[in-house]
Amino acid sequence: MLNPTTELNLLEKEISENQVPEDNAHKTKAAGRRVTALLNQRHEKFAQALAEGKSAIEAYKNAGYAPNDGNAARLKGNERIRARVAELQECAAAHAAVTLQGLIDEAADIQTKAMADGKYSAAVAALTVKAKLAGLWVDKAENNANNVVYHIADHPLTMDEWSEKWCSPGENISN
Image 1: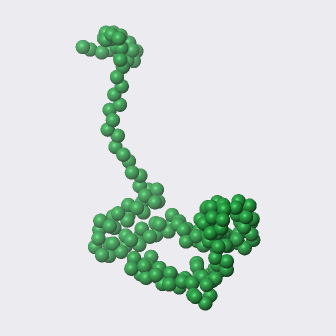
Image 2: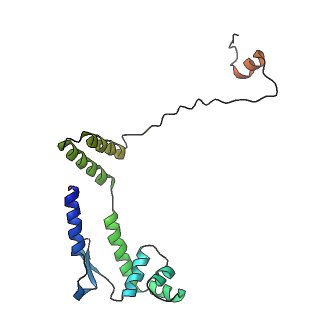
Image 3: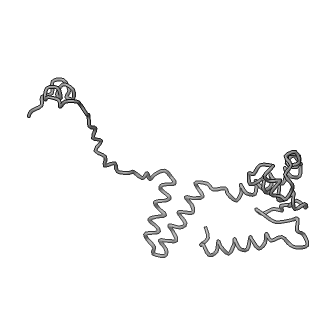
């Protein structure tokens, strides 16, 4: 795990490497491999909208086409469009993959760095997060409710009636 400044610098570098060159506008680089964008810009916009989860009709309109359900369905079935949508979704899934162990490892790194910097409250917070992620820490809410149940009756109960209704057999109540 890198410190936030280094991570930011790497992210900026990755973004600058992924810029589309003017002379080769149909190729970009993502997730360590070549990703080929569709040459037709409308088709590319359509595929991107489909990859985002939009319907074919909505993606067709967003790509700049006049609304036409049949053409939207036909374009969605296009082999190149389907391949591009799959490629975009695969790249998105690779970037979004978050695992429990990865989160625990990040919390451990944060804890180590905080301890090294003398930021003990941050280290304790990171330790708490690790414990929660591992399932070893459960937040318990204190319940201060008295759970008093009031019974409303037309007339008050006598001591004998109350005793009969609410006490176990053989229990004796005193005034």
